[in-house]
Image (cartoon, rainbow, N blue to C red; front, side, top):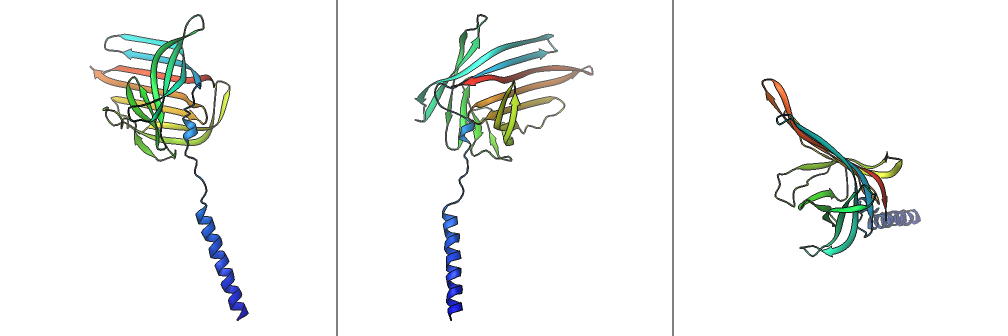
Amino acid sequence: MKQTILLLAVVVLAASAGCKRDENPPRVDPGHAYFPVDTGRWIDYKVDSIWRNDITGVTDSTSYLLREKITNDFLDAQGRTAQRLVRYMAADNGSWTPKDVWWQVRTPANAERAEENQRRVKLIFPPRTGEYWNTNATNVGRPYELTYLAVDVPWSVNGMSFDSTLLVKTTYQNNAIITNTYYERYAKNVGLVYRQVDSTNTQYLDGIPKVRGTWYKQTITGYGH
C-alpha cells in the first residue's frame, strides 16, 4: 500500500512539474532590434549608382555619401507612432545637406518605410528563414515577394563587425530578358547596413543584346546615436 501511495505521489509531482514548465515557455525574440526607432540615431553610407541604356547609348554613374537620421516621432494617418527620417548628402566641404525626408513605423508584426512616398513592408516579425511577404502590400505597386535568406548571422564590412544580422532577398525568378536583384541586410541595434537593388531589361536587336538597367549599392560606413 505504501508503495502504491509513493508511486502516486511521484506521478503527481511529475505532472505538476510538467504543468509549471508549460506555464513558462521560453521567450521568443521578436526581432524588433533589427529596426531601431529611437530618435537621434543615424547611419552613414557610401552609395554607388549606375544606369545604362544601350538603345540610346547613355551610360552614367554616381557615387556619394548618404546619412539617414531619425529626427522625431509623430502620429501617422492610422494613429501609430512613426519616425521622421531625414536623408542628407555630404557636400564638398564636409557638411551634410538635406536631400529628402522619408518616414518609418514599427509595429509588433512588421516594419514599414515610406520610400519616395511609397509605403513598403521592409521586415516581418519575428524574422525566420522561409518566411515570405509582399513588400508592396501597403501600396498600389505590383506584388513583389521577399524572404529571409539568413537570420542572426555575423557580418563584417568597412572595419565594422556585427554579431547578429539578417539578410532579405527577393524571390523573383529571373529570366533571359528581365533580371532583378534585391538584397537588404540589417544589423541588430543598428538597422540597415547594406542594400543592393539591380534591375535590367535585355532586348535582342538583330541578334545583339541591348541592355537597359540600373545598379544601386548602399553600404554602411559609420553609425551613432
